Image (cartoon, rainbow, N blue to C red; front, side, top):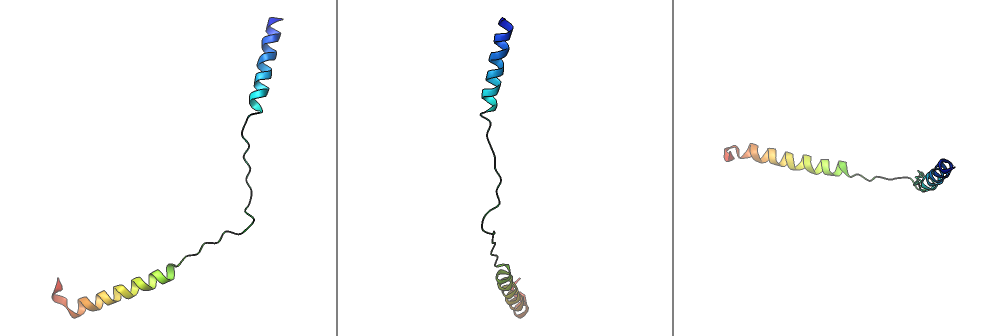
Length: 64
């Protein structure tokens, strides 16, 4: 009889603990994700600066 009470208490505790598990939901966003990149503009500026530096070093080769 005592074993039955202990088993019943353990069963009730297990059910109570299992009811408290967190729930995770994964949902798709309603709006599409947009990513704006300005890579081309940065690249053009870098190329222009590098070209200007090369021209400067060619004109004044005694700098270094």
